[in-house]
Amino acid sequence: MSDQSNKKSLIEKITQTQVWRAIFRTGIPRNRRQRMMVMLNGVFLHLHPVRLPKHAVKVKYTWCMGGLSFFVFLVLTVTGILLMFYYRPTVEYAYGDIIDMREQVPLGIMREVHRWGAHLMVITVWLHMFRVFMTGSYKPPREFNWAIGVVLLVLTMLLSFTGYLLPWDQLAIWAITVGSNMAGATPLVGTSGPGSALLAIGDVNFITSSSDARFAMLGGRFVGEGALLRFYVLHCIGLPFVIMIFMIVHFWRVRKDGGISGPT
Amino acid sequence: MTQSSTTSDPSSNKEIKCNDQSIDRRSFIKWLTVGWAAFAAVLGGYGSLILRYLFPNVLFEPKQSFRAGFITDYNLGEVSEKFKDQFGVWIVREQDKIYALSTVCTHLGCTPNWQPSEGKYKCPCHGSGFYKNGINFEGPAPRPLERFKIELSDTGELLVDKTKKFQFEKGEWNDPESFVLV
Image 1 (tube, chains in turn cyan, green):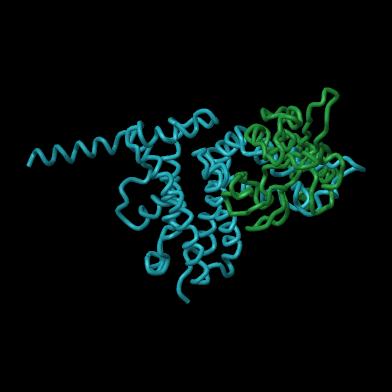
Image 2: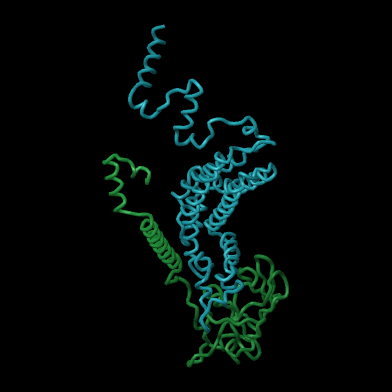
């Protein structure tokens, strides 16, 4: 009996310390108002709506594909950071480091988790898009969020594309050779694209194989050490930074456009 | 604003007067425009610098031109792969001439393999095939392989210059710079 009251007073003592109260402003949510305040005051929870309509939590309706895409993105972020500890993006080391990640590094499955996760994210993003289309959730007032979603899809593909080169095996090098040659066919700014000859003064052509869009992308005339480093930096820093900004806006607008769409 | 200036409270009158002296609508809009223009100019300037930054001045790649030895180094009918790995060029010796053929597939840029037994270049990526002279005959390649400028130096050595290319479909293979007569 006295033991229990001691316990209770200990909890009370802890929850009444300045440190505790400074961190948890709202206290334990015991009523509706406090539950609301918890959602509104926390930086992570405030992206969530205070209340959810019943249909919005039905897996049958949403497939949870948006949430899964974000979850897989988090997995990819964590595993990706871990892989960076063992991977060196140079022609000399890249391929060997990838092999070592499987053969020598503890938990050799880390790289595979990142790879499978990457495939999975492309799949979940597509299925999310499919669900949004089939439920008509792209319609006003959500039409702008659909456009942001299309940007997120493109960024997902670009992350996939830049990550493709990093193993530095034959498949990677030739896949990126093929992919980057499409950049060379860009109208006006690609050397083999239509209209590239228009940007010239007399005989001097400004768009050549060492000054076109493909060259800027690869940092060279072919897929070499420049391309490997550029793709690495874009894959690890550049594109994740951009996609996170777009994701923030995407999630925010889901809320502000009236939450998850419901059956009409 | 104008409403409050008509009030009789002396302290607020003073404040409004002070504000009126410092800035009016016309100069506010003027300076706003100047400010945004300056901001846009800085952003544009910085943006173009970043764009230029993406194009390296020095490349750690093989040179675009190289010496390919003497004509006598090549046997009649031979496709030499001596310079394939480093420079991406096959040296082909025919009955009457010798020329430098690009090893870049005209489909999507992979490197085909020379198959002497079949007498063709075969691309491993999507299966394009080219005859020994570079003309495409199978697979998705839309046009023949390109040839590069080749000439004899004063010492009689072959010089290949990859900065100048010759395309069959433009009729450029008849250009005397695209081959060396044997």
